Amino acid sequence: MSELFSPDFLFRNAILGGLGVALLCSVLGVYLVLRRLVLIGVALPQASAAGVAAVFWLTGHGQGGGDSGHLLALGGSLAATFGALALLVLGQRRARSPAEWGVGALFAISSAATILFVALNPKGDMEMAGLLRGELLAITVSDLHALGVLLLVVGALLFLFRRDLLLTSFDPEFARTIGREPARYDLLLYFLIGAGIALGVMTAGPLVVFGFLVLPALAALRVAPGLAAAFAISAAIASVSFLGGFWLSYRADLPAGPVCVAMVAVCWALAGGAMRLRAARGAAALLLALLASLPAAPLGCASRFAAAQERQNAPLPRGTLPEPVASRAVAVLLFENATGRPLRLSQGLLKDAERAVGQPSSAERPTVPAALQQRAAFELERRGFAVIPIEQLPAALARPPGEPLAAARAAAEAGLGGLVLAGTLRRFTITETGLLLVRLDLTLLDAQSQQVLWTGAATRPVPIRSALTLQEVLLDAGPPIFADAFGNPVDERR
Image (tube, rainbow, N blue to C red; front, side):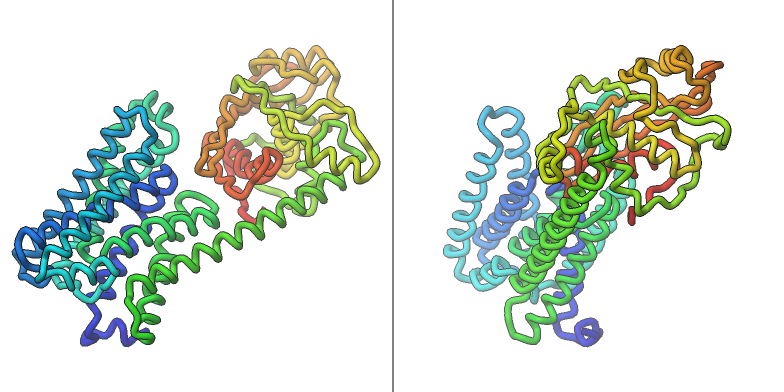
Protein backbone atom coordinates (compact mmCIF):
# COMPACT_ATOMS: atom_id res chain seq x y z
CA MET A 1 0.00 0.00 0.00
CA SER A 2 2.92 2.37 0.69
CA GLU A 3 3.92 1.96 -2.95
CA LEU A 4 0.64 3.53 -4.05
CA PHE A 5 1.48 6.80 -2.28
CA SER A 6 5.10 7.11 -3.30
CA PRO A 7 5.81 10.39 -5.22
CA ASP A 8 7.12 8.59 -8.27
CA PHE A 9 4.23 6.12 -8.51
CA LEU A 10 2.66 6.23 -11.96
CA PHE A 11 -0.94 6.30 -10.72
CA ARG A 12 -0.49 8.68 -7.78
CA ASN A 13 -2.82 11.29 -9.31
CA ALA A 14 -5.47 8.62 -9.85
CA ILE A 15 -5.30 7.58 -6.18
CA LEU A 16 -5.44 11.10 -4.76
CA GLY A 17 -8.15 12.23 -7.18
CA GLY A 18 -10.28 9.14 -6.71
CA LEU A 19 -9.92 9.35 -2.92
CA GLY A 20 -11.03 12.98 -3.04
CA VAL A 21 -14.09 12.05 -5.11
CA ALA A 22 -14.90 9.19 -2.71
CA LEU A 23 -14.73 11.48 0.34
CA LEU A 24 -16.76 14.22 -1.32
CA CYS A 25 -19.48 11.85 -2.51
CA SER A 26 -19.66 9.95 0.78
CA VAL A 27 -20.44 13.12 2.74
CA LEU A 28 -22.96 14.50 0.24
CA GLY A 29 -24.48 11.04 -0.07
CA VAL A 30 -25.66 11.09 3.55
CA TYR A 31 -27.95 14.00 2.68
CA LEU A 32 -29.10 12.30 -0.52
CA VAL A 33 -30.03 9.11 1.31
CA LEU A 34 -31.67 10.78 4.29
CA ARG A 35 -33.74 13.04 2.05
CA ARG A 36 -34.73 10.09 -0.16
CA LEU A 37 -33.02 11.59 -3.23
CA VAL A 38 -31.12 8.46 -4.22
CA LEU A 39 -32.72 8.36 -7.67
CA ILE A 40 -31.45 11.87 -8.31
CA GLY A 41 -28.02 10.51 -7.49
CA VAL A 42 -28.53 8.00 -10.31
CA ALA A 43 -29.67 10.47 -12.96
CA LEU A 44 -27.36 13.42 -12.32
CA PRO A 45 -24.04 11.59 -12.91
CA GLN A 46 -25.42 10.25 -16.18
CA ALA A 47 -26.58 13.72 -17.20
CA SER A 48 -23.12 15.05 -16.36
CA ALA A 49 -21.52 12.34 -18.51
CA ALA A 50 -23.84 13.32 -21.37
CA GLY A 51 -22.64 16.92 -21.06
CA VAL A 52 -18.98 15.81 -21.20
CA ALA A 53 -19.65 13.58 -24.23
CA ALA A 54 -21.51 16.42 -25.97
CA VAL A 55 -18.54 18.77 -25.53
CA PHE A 56 -16.12 16.12 -26.78
CA TRP A 57 -18.28 15.66 -29.88
CA LEU A 58 -18.74 19.38 -30.54
CA THR A 59 -15.04 20.20 -30.12
CA GLY A 60 -13.86 17.11 -32.00
CA HIS A 61 -11.38 15.85 -29.38
CA GLY A 62 -11.30 13.94 -26.13
CA GLN A 63 -10.20 14.56 -22.59
CA GLY A 64 -6.57 14.57 -23.66
CA GLY A 65 -7.09 17.50 -26.04
CA GLY A 66 -5.33 20.04 -23.84
CA ASP A 67 -6.30 22.35 -21.00
CA SER A 68 -8.79 24.28 -23.12
CA GLY A 69 -10.64 21.12 -24.08
CA HIS A 70 -10.62 19.96 -20.50
CA LEU A 71 -12.09 23.23 -19.26
CA LEU A 72 -14.77 23.07 -21.94
CA ALA A 73 -15.64 19.53 -20.88
CA LEU A 74 -15.85 20.64 -17.24
CA GLY A 75 -18.16 23.45 -18.32
CA GLY A 76 -20.33 20.96 -20.19
CA SER A 77 -20.45 18.72 -17.15
CA LEU A 78 -21.47 21.61 -14.87
CA ALA A 79 -24.07 22.91 -17.34
CA ALA A 80 -25.65 19.50 -17.87
CA THR A 81 -25.68 18.68 -14.15
CA PHE A 82 -27.22 21.95 -12.98
CA GLY A 83 -29.62 22.00 -15.92
CA ALA A 84 -30.86 18.51 -15.11
CA LEU A 85 -31.06 19.38 -11.41
CA ALA A 86 -33.10 22.50 -12.15
CA LEU A 87 -35.49 20.51 -14.33
CA LEU A 88 -35.97 17.87 -11.63
CA VAL A 89 -36.50 20.34 -8.78
CA LEU A 90 -38.83 22.66 -10.68
CA GLY A 91 -40.68 19.75 -12.23
CA GLN A 92 -41.17 18.15 -8.82
CA ARG A 93 -42.73 21.34 -7.45
CA ARG A 94 -45.08 21.91 -10.38
CA ALA A 95 -45.93 18.46 -11.69
CA ARG A 96 -48.66 16.27 -10.30
CA SER A 97 -46.95 13.05 -11.27
CA PRO A 98 -44.48 11.31 -8.93
CA ALA A 99 -40.92 12.66 -8.95
CA GLU A 100 -39.58 9.21 -9.90
CA TRP A 101 -41.14 9.53 -13.34
CA GLY A 102 -39.05 12.56 -14.24
CA VAL A 103 -35.90 11.01 -12.78
CA GLY A 104 -36.40 7.85 -14.83
CA ALA A 105 -36.99 9.82 -18.01
CA LEU A 106 -33.89 11.93 -17.40
CA PHE A 107 -31.74 8.86 -16.81
CA ALA A 108 -32.96 7.15 -20.00
CA ILE A 109 -32.46 10.27 -22.15
CA SER A 110 -29.02 11.00 -20.66
CA SER A 111 -27.83 7.42 -21.16
CA ALA A 112 -28.94 7.38 -24.80
CA ALA A 113 -27.41 10.81 -25.47
CA THR A 114 -24.08 9.77 -23.93
CA ILE A 115 -23.82 6.66 -26.08
CA LEU A 116 -24.76 8.58 -29.25
CA PHE A 117 -22.24 11.36 -28.59
CA VAL A 118 -19.51 8.78 -27.96
CA ALA A 119 -20.36 6.95 -31.19
CA LEU A 120 -20.30 10.20 -33.20
CA ASN A 121 -16.88 11.26 -31.89
CA PRO A 122 -14.06 9.24 -33.53
CA LYS A 123 -11.29 10.96 -31.53
CA GLY A 124 -12.62 10.94 -28.01
CA ASP A 125 -14.53 7.67 -27.96
CA MET A 126 -11.78 5.67 -26.23
CA GLU A 127 -11.26 8.19 -23.46
CA MET A 128 -14.98 8.75 -22.98
CA ALA A 129 -15.60 5.01 -22.85
CA GLY A 130 -12.88 4.73 -20.20
CA LEU A 131 -14.52 7.53 -18.22
CA LEU A 132 -17.87 5.74 -18.34
CA ARG A 133 -16.25 2.50 -17.14
CA GLY A 134 -14.73 4.25 -14.17
CA GLU A 135 -11.13 4.40 -15.29
CA LEU A 136 -9.18 6.75 -13.00
CA LEU A 137 -5.86 6.84 -14.82
CA ALA A 138 -6.49 10.03 -16.82
CA ILE A 139 -6.67 12.34 -13.78
CA THR A 140 -4.42 15.35 -14.30
CA VAL A 141 -2.73 17.74 -11.88
CA SER A 142 -5.30 20.41 -12.74
CA ASP A 143 -8.06 17.92 -11.82
CA LEU A 144 -6.41 17.42 -8.44
CA HIS A 145 -6.17 21.16 -7.81
CA ALA A 146 -9.80 21.76 -8.76
CA LEU A 147 -10.92 18.81 -6.65
CA GLY A 148 -8.91 20.05 -3.67
CA VAL A 149 -10.48 23.50 -3.89
CA LEU A 150 -13.96 21.99 -4.16
CA LEU A 151 -13.34 19.76 -1.14
CA LEU A 152 -12.33 22.78 0.93
CA VAL A 153 -15.35 24.80 -0.21
CA VAL A 154 -17.84 21.99 0.36
CA GLY A 155 -16.31 21.10 3.72
CA ALA A 156 -16.44 24.72 4.89
CA LEU A 157 -20.04 25.23 3.76
CA LEU A 158 -21.21 21.95 5.28
CA PHE A 159 -19.53 22.83 8.57
CA LEU A 160 -20.83 26.41 8.70
CA PHE A 161 -24.42 25.50 7.79
CA ARG A 162 -24.57 21.97 9.24
CA ARG A 163 -27.30 22.74 11.77
CA ASP A 164 -29.45 24.63 9.28
CA LEU A 165 -29.08 21.95 6.61
CA LEU A 166 -30.03 19.18 9.02
CA LEU A 167 -32.94 21.13 10.47
CA THR A 168 -34.42 22.08 7.11
CA SER A 169 -33.86 18.55 5.80
CA PHE A 170 -35.69 16.72 8.58
CA ASP A 171 -38.11 19.23 10.07
CA PRO A 172 -38.86 22.01 7.54
CA GLU A 173 -42.03 23.11 9.35
CA PHE A 174 -40.18 23.79 12.60
CA ALA A 175 -37.33 25.43 10.67
CA ARG A 176 -39.78 27.81 9.05
CA THR A 177 -41.28 28.76 12.42
CA ILE A 178 -37.88 29.82 13.79
CA GLY A 179 -36.97 31.86 10.73
CA ARG A 180 -34.98 29.31 8.71
CA GLU A 181 -36.39 29.30 5.19
CA PRO A 182 -36.04 25.71 3.88
CA ALA A 183 -35.90 26.76 0.21
CA ARG A 184 -32.74 28.78 0.81
CA TYR A 185 -30.86 25.88 2.36
CA ASP A 186 -32.26 23.44 -0.18
CA LEU A 187 -30.71 25.64 -2.86
CA LEU A 188 -27.37 25.52 -1.05
CA LEU A 189 -27.52 21.75 -0.72
CA TYR A 190 -28.46 21.29 -4.38
CA PHE A 191 -25.56 23.54 -5.40
CA LEU A 192 -23.09 21.45 -3.38
CA ILE A 193 -24.50 18.21 -4.77
CA GLY A 194 -24.46 19.47 -8.35
CA ALA A 195 -20.91 20.84 -8.15
CA GLY A 196 -19.64 17.67 -6.49
CA ILE A 197 -21.25 15.40 -9.06
CA ALA A 198 -20.09 17.49 -12.05
CA LEU A 199 -16.46 17.56 -10.98
CA GLY A 200 -16.58 13.98 -9.75
CA VAL A 201 -17.78 12.71 -13.11
CA MET A 202 -15.00 14.61 -14.89
CA THR A 203 -12.46 13.12 -12.47
CA ALA A 204 -13.62 9.54 -11.89
CA GLY A 205 -16.67 8.88 -14.06
CA PRO A 206 -20.40 8.40 -13.33
CA LEU A 207 -20.02 4.83 -12.05
CA VAL A 208 -17.64 5.79 -9.25
CA VAL A 209 -19.62 8.93 -8.40
CA PHE A 210 -22.94 7.12 -8.09
CA GLY A 211 -21.45 4.18 -6.20
CA PHE A 212 -19.79 6.40 -3.60
CA LEU A 213 -22.78 8.73 -3.35
CA VAL A 214 -25.06 5.94 -2.20
CA LEU A 215 -23.30 2.89 -0.77
CA PRO A 216 -21.09 4.46 1.95
CA ALA A 217 -24.03 6.50 3.23
CA LEU A 218 -26.32 3.44 3.28
CA ALA A 219 -23.71 1.45 5.18
CA ALA A 220 -22.98 4.24 7.67
CA LEU A 221 -26.63 4.97 8.43
CA ARG A 222 -27.17 1.32 9.34
CA VAL A 223 -24.54 1.29 12.07
CA ALA A 224 -23.99 4.91 13.14
CA PRO A 225 -25.30 5.89 16.60
CA GLY A 226 -26.07 9.44 15.45
CA LEU A 227 -26.00 11.82 12.51
CA ALA A 228 -22.58 13.26 13.30
CA ALA A 229 -21.14 9.76 13.47
CA ALA A 230 -22.89 8.85 10.20
CA PHE A 231 -20.89 11.45 8.25
CA ALA A 232 -17.60 10.30 9.79
CA ILE A 233 -18.34 6.60 9.27
CA SER A 234 -19.46 7.20 5.68
CA ALA A 235 -16.19 9.00 4.90
CA ALA A 236 -14.16 6.26 6.60
CA ILE A 237 -15.94 3.51 4.65
CA ALA A 238 -15.40 5.38 1.39
CA SER A 239 -11.69 5.88 2.10
CA VAL A 240 -11.01 2.28 3.08
CA SER A 241 -13.07 0.91 0.19
CA PHE A 242 -11.41 3.09 -2.39
CA LEU A 243 -7.86 2.41 -1.23
CA GLY A 244 -8.50 -1.31 -0.87
CA GLY A 245 -10.26 -1.46 -4.23
CA PHE A 246 -7.53 0.43 -6.02
CA TRP A 247 -4.82 -1.81 -4.53
CA LEU A 248 -6.78 -4.91 -5.55
CA SER A 249 -7.38 -3.59 -9.08
CA TYR A 250 -3.66 -2.73 -9.39
CA ARG A 251 -2.61 -6.22 -8.35
CA ALA A 252 -5.24 -8.03 -10.43
CA ASP A 253 -5.00 -5.72 -13.46
CA LEU A 254 -8.72 -4.83 -13.35
CA PRO A 255 -10.54 -1.51 -13.94
CA ALA A 256 -10.16 0.55 -10.77
CA GLY A 257 -13.62 2.13 -10.66
CA PRO A 258 -15.76 -1.04 -10.70
CA VAL A 259 -13.47 -2.77 -8.19
CA CYS A 260 -13.69 0.17 -5.77
CA VAL A 261 -17.50 0.20 -6.07
CA ALA A 262 -17.53 -3.56 -5.47
CA MET A 263 -15.47 -3.05 -2.30
CA VAL A 264 -17.85 -0.44 -0.91
CA ALA A 265 -20.77 -2.73 -1.80
CA VAL A 266 -19.18 -5.40 0.40
CA CYS A 267 -19.03 -2.88 3.27
CA TRP A 268 -22.71 -2.09 2.74
CA ALA A 269 -23.61 -5.79 2.85
CA LEU A 270 -21.60 -6.27 6.06
CA ALA A 271 -23.32 -3.28 7.67
CA GLY A 272 -26.72 -4.70 6.70
CA GLY A 273 -25.82 -8.05 8.25
CA ALA A 274 -24.67 -6.32 11.45
CA MET A 275 -27.95 -4.41 11.66
CA ARG A 276 -30.03 -7.56 11.22
CA LEU A 277 -27.99 -9.32 13.89
CA ARG A 278 -28.51 -6.41 16.24
CA ALA A 279 -32.25 -6.36 15.52
CA ALA A 280 -32.49 -10.10 16.19
CA ARG A 281 -30.65 -9.73 19.49
CA GLY A 282 -32.84 -6.76 20.43
CA ALA A 283 -36.04 -8.70 19.70
CA ALA A 284 -34.80 -11.64 21.77
CA ALA A 285 -33.85 -9.37 24.67
CA LEU A 286 -37.23 -7.65 24.48
CA LEU A 287 -39.09 -10.95 24.61
CA LEU A 288 -37.03 -12.13 27.59
CA ALA A 289 -37.68 -8.84 29.39
CA LEU A 290 -41.41 -9.17 28.75
CA LEU A 291 -41.49 -12.76 30.02
CA ALA A 292 -39.50 -11.87 33.12
CA SER A 293 -41.67 -8.90 34.05
CA LEU A 294 -45.14 -10.29 33.32
CA PRO A 295 -45.97 -11.48 36.87
CA ALA A 296 -45.35 -8.03 38.40
CA ALA A 297 -46.41 -5.71 35.61
CA PRO A 298 -50.07 -4.63 35.79
CA LEU A 299 -49.42 -1.58 33.66
CA GLY A 300 -48.44 -3.60 30.57
CA CYS A 301 -45.44 -2.79 28.42
CA ALA A 302 -44.75 0.48 30.18
CA SER A 303 -43.45 -1.25 33.32
CA ARG A 304 -41.06 -3.46 31.37
CA PHE A 305 -38.44 -0.84 30.68
CA ALA A 306 -37.00 -1.08 34.19
CA ALA A 307 -36.81 -4.86 33.86
CA ALA A 308 -35.12 -4.53 30.48
CA GLN A 309 -32.38 -2.41 32.11
CA GLU A 310 -32.24 -4.20 35.48
CA ARG A 311 -28.82 -5.70 34.82
CA GLN A 312 -27.40 -2.28 33.93
CA ASN A 313 -28.55 -0.39 37.00
CA ALA A 314 -25.37 1.65 37.34
CA PRO A 315 -25.84 5.10 38.91
CA LEU A 316 -25.74 8.17 36.69
CA PRO A 317 -24.88 11.82 37.43
CA ARG A 318 -27.76 14.15 38.25
CA GLY A 319 -27.16 16.47 35.33
CA THR A 320 -29.24 19.61 35.87
CA LEU A 321 -31.58 17.99 38.39
CA PRO A 322 -31.50 19.41 41.95
CA GLU A 323 -29.77 17.60 44.78
CA PRO A 324 -31.86 14.57 45.83
CA VAL A 325 -33.48 14.88 49.27
CA ALA A 326 -33.51 11.49 50.98
CA SER A 327 -36.59 12.19 53.09
CA ARG A 328 -38.76 13.23 50.15
CA ALA A 329 -39.76 10.77 47.47
CA VAL A 330 -40.65 11.73 43.92
CA ALA A 331 -44.00 10.82 42.41
CA VAL A 332 -43.79 10.54 38.62
CA LEU A 333 -47.24 11.33 37.27
CA LEU A 334 -48.61 10.10 33.97
CA PHE A 335 -47.41 12.39 31.20
CA GLU A 336 -49.94 14.39 29.24
CA ASN A 337 -50.26 13.48 25.57
CA ALA A 338 -50.38 16.74 23.60
CA THR A 339 -49.48 15.20 20.24
CA GLY A 340 -53.07 14.76 19.09
CA ARG A 341 -52.53 11.02 18.47
CA PRO A 342 -53.35 8.07 20.75
CA LEU A 343 -49.83 6.58 20.61
CA ARG A 344 -50.94 3.15 21.79
CA LEU A 345 -48.45 0.32 21.81
CA SER A 346 -49.06 -2.89 19.93
CA GLN A 347 -49.83 -5.92 22.09
CA GLY A 348 -48.99 -8.63 19.56
CA LEU A 349 -45.71 -9.62 21.18
CA LEU A 350 -47.11 -9.07 24.66
CA LYS A 351 -50.06 -11.39 24.08
CA ASP A 352 -47.79 -14.10 22.71
CA ALA A 353 -45.59 -13.83 25.79
CA GLU A 354 -48.61 -13.93 28.13
CA ARG A 355 -49.97 -17.03 26.43
CA ALA A 356 -46.53 -18.65 26.68
CA VAL A 357 -46.50 -18.34 30.47
CA GLY A 358 -50.21 -19.06 30.85
CA GLN A 359 -51.14 -15.60 32.16
CA PRO A 360 -53.62 -13.94 29.79
CA SER A 361 -54.14 -10.29 30.67
CA SER A 362 -57.14 -8.02 30.25
CA ALA A 363 -55.19 -4.84 30.91
CA GLU A 364 -55.83 -1.78 28.73
CA ARG A 365 -53.40 -1.29 25.88
CA PRO A 366 -50.40 0.70 27.16
CA THR A 367 -49.47 4.04 25.65
CA VAL A 368 -46.25 5.86 24.86
CA PRO A 369 -46.77 8.46 27.67
CA ALA A 370 -47.27 5.62 30.18
CA ALA A 371 -44.09 3.93 28.95
CA LEU A 372 -42.17 7.19 29.23
CA GLN A 373 -43.58 7.69 32.74
CA GLN A 374 -42.16 4.33 33.79
CA ARG A 375 -38.86 5.09 32.09
CA ALA A 376 -38.65 8.48 33.86
CA ALA A 377 -39.12 6.79 37.26
CA PHE A 378 -36.35 4.33 36.44
CA GLU A 379 -34.00 7.10 35.26
CA LEU A 380 -34.63 9.14 38.42
CA GLU A 381 -33.72 6.13 40.55
CA ARG A 382 -30.47 5.78 38.65
CA ARG A 383 -29.73 9.41 39.50
CA GLY A 384 -30.13 8.91 43.25
CA PHE A 385 -33.77 9.92 43.79
CA ALA A 386 -36.23 7.94 45.89
CA VAL A 387 -39.22 7.25 43.64
CA ILE A 388 -42.69 6.15 44.63
CA PRO A 389 -43.59 3.00 42.65
CA ILE A 390 -46.08 3.95 39.98
CA GLU A 391 -48.46 1.15 40.92
CA GLN A 392 -48.66 2.64 44.45
CA LEU A 393 -49.78 6.10 43.30
CA PRO A 394 -53.33 7.08 44.30
CA ALA A 395 -56.06 6.20 41.84
CA ALA A 396 -56.89 9.91 41.49
CA LEU A 397 -53.56 10.38 39.70
CA ALA A 398 -54.15 7.63 37.12
CA ARG A 399 -54.89 10.27 34.48
CA PRO A 400 -52.72 13.18 33.36
CA PRO A 401 -53.49 16.13 35.68
CA GLY A 402 -52.73 18.76 33.02
CA GLU A 403 -50.30 21.64 33.41
CA PRO A 404 -47.57 21.39 36.10
CA LEU A 405 -49.23 23.50 38.81
CA ALA A 406 -52.44 21.54 38.43
CA ALA A 407 -50.38 18.36 38.78
CA ALA A 408 -48.88 19.64 42.06
CA ARG A 409 -52.34 20.53 43.41
CA ALA A 410 -53.74 17.15 42.41
CA ALA A 411 -50.84 15.39 44.13
CA ALA A 412 -51.33 17.41 47.33
CA GLU A 413 -55.07 16.68 47.32
CA ALA A 414 -54.28 12.99 46.94
CA GLY A 415 -52.12 13.07 50.07
CA LEU A 416 -48.66 13.20 48.54
CA GLY A 417 -46.31 15.52 50.37
CA GLY A 418 -43.06 15.03 48.47
CA LEU A 419 -41.91 16.00 45.03
CA VAL A 420 -43.85 15.61 41.80
CA LEU A 421 -42.49 15.13 38.28
CA ALA A 422 -45.04 16.18 35.64
CA GLY A 423 -44.50 15.99 31.90
CA THR A 424 -46.12 16.87 28.58
CA LEU A 425 -45.34 14.91 25.42
CA ARG A 426 -45.72 17.44 22.63
CA ARG A 427 -44.16 15.50 19.77
CA PHE A 428 -43.43 11.85 19.01
CA THR A 429 -42.89 11.35 15.29
CA ILE A 430 -40.93 8.61 13.56
CA THR A 431 -39.51 9.73 10.22
CA GLU A 432 -38.95 7.55 7.17
CA THR A 433 -35.21 8.05 7.61
CA GLY A 434 -35.07 6.24 10.97
CA LEU A 435 -35.22 9.21 13.35
CA LEU A 436 -37.49 9.81 16.31
CA LEU A 437 -38.47 13.49 16.56
CA VAL A 438 -39.53 14.02 20.15
CA ARG A 439 -40.35 16.90 22.46
CA LEU A 440 -40.98 16.07 26.10
CA ASP A 441 -41.32 18.94 28.60
CA LEU A 442 -40.68 18.02 32.25
CA THR A 443 -41.26 19.94 35.50
CA LEU A 444 -40.25 18.98 39.05
CA LEU A 445 -42.40 20.62 41.73
CA ASP A 446 -42.95 20.61 45.48
CA ALA A 447 -46.43 19.16 46.00
CA GLN A 448 -47.14 21.19 49.19
CA SER A 449 -45.76 24.62 48.24
CA GLN A 450 -46.39 24.12 44.50
CA GLN A 451 -42.97 25.65 43.88
CA VAL A 452 -41.21 24.78 40.63
CA LEU A 453 -37.81 23.28 41.50
CA TRP A 454 -36.57 22.34 38.04
CA THR A 455 -37.60 22.29 34.38
CA GLY A 456 -36.13 20.39 31.46
CA ALA A 457 -36.98 19.20 27.97
CA ALA A 458 -35.92 16.51 25.50
CA THR A 459 -35.77 17.90 21.96
CA ARG A 460 -32.92 16.14 20.12
CA PRO A 461 -33.67 13.65 17.33
CA VAL A 462 -32.91 10.06 18.32
CA PRO A 463 -31.74 7.45 15.75
CA ILE A 464 -33.96 4.33 15.96
CA ARG A 465 -33.15 2.64 12.64
CA SER A 466 -32.98 -0.89 14.05
CA ALA A 467 -36.34 -0.64 15.89
CA LEU A 468 -39.30 -2.38 14.29
CA THR A 469 -42.11 -1.65 16.78
CA LEU A 470 -43.00 1.17 19.18
CA GLN A 471 -41.83 -1.01 22.06
CA GLU A 472 -38.39 -1.33 20.49
CA VAL A 473 -38.40 2.39 19.67
CA LEU A 474 -38.94 3.21 23.33
CA LEU A 475 -36.31 0.72 24.47
CA ASP A 476 -33.74 2.32 22.15
CA ALA A 477 -34.81 5.94 22.64
CA GLY A 478 -35.52 5.94 26.40
CA PRO A 479 -31.97 6.56 27.68
CA PRO A 480 -31.09 9.35 25.20
CA ILE A 481 -34.48 11.05 25.70
CA PHE A 482 -33.99 11.41 29.45
CA ALA A 483 -30.28 12.08 29.15
CA ASP A 484 -31.26 15.07 27.01
CA ALA A 485 -34.03 16.14 29.38
CA PHE A 486 -32.02 15.69 32.59
CA GLY A 487 -28.91 17.28 31.14
CA ASN A 488 -26.24 14.58 31.19
CA PRO A 489 -24.73 12.51 28.35
CA VAL A 490 -26.16 9.09 27.54
CA ASP A 491 -23.94 6.04 27.78
CA GLU A 492 -24.24 4.36 24.38
CA ARG A 493 -23.44 0.97 25.96
CA ARG A 494 -26.76 1.09 27.77
